[in-house]
Length: 282
Ligand SMILES: C[S@@+](CC[C@H](N)C(=O)[O-])C[C@H]1O[C@@H](n2cnc3c(N)ncnc32)[C@H](O)[C@@H]1O
Image (tube, rainbow, N blue to C red):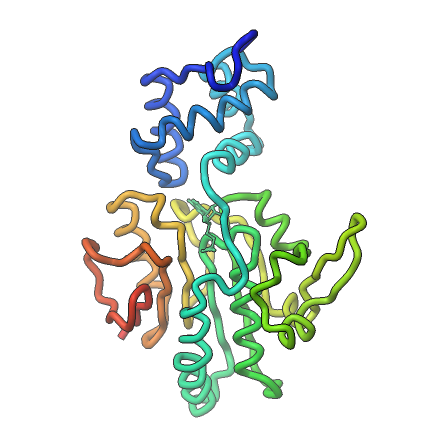
């Protein structure tokens, strides 16, 4: 790396294949040829910071780290963690106006006050807290409910942020003011205004590290799953593998939400199409 600018660092085809195979096997992320420049650019920075001479030396270092921390850094640098509060608002509208009122009525009749939801690939937590707010609003004033929303991700760095539950002012701009005041506490942190998830939210969310390619130690059945903007990074066979497993985790009548560009076209499944990116287990 000595003397080279980041732009001049070359990633050979063999090194690219080697890295993409390892990443695919570990977490399903499909680094196809079109991603080569992204891989080169992102890893070149890490090579420079860590004073590695080449990609092989860096990958040896990653694989020799038995704590898995370096692997996590590698995956973090290659995946995108983009998220926001109430992203893809139509899903939260569907929960609020359609799905939750019916679910709550049905559960009340059955005297089953348990509601379980999962945000698979939750990144820094905004999705989980948005679900929590939507649920608390739907259940307002009805104390007997046992509600848990599980947020999982492969990135320990993102999970740390999610657990802290602190967000900058510009990140909470999509909130209705009344909801923001009700569910977030405004504070000053490092000289700037931050918003912190309230106890009411924290009481019903839980964050765990989970690689979607591995076992899912999750107690079902679940009432709904958000797996949004995650499967887009996987190939069809990995998507098929996940969709089959989501089906098994869900209760009958439960719903799966996918991201705006993730339809189930080309995947064999038994879900009933409700509206774009919303699928029901019947
Ligand atoms: C673009 S974010 C989506 C966040 C959120 N679901 C949303 O739509 O706003 C994708 C997340 O998937 C996570 N991810 C990627 N591969 C994963 C895997 N194999 N297991 C668990 N999480 C994974 C990434 O770490 C990242 O945080």
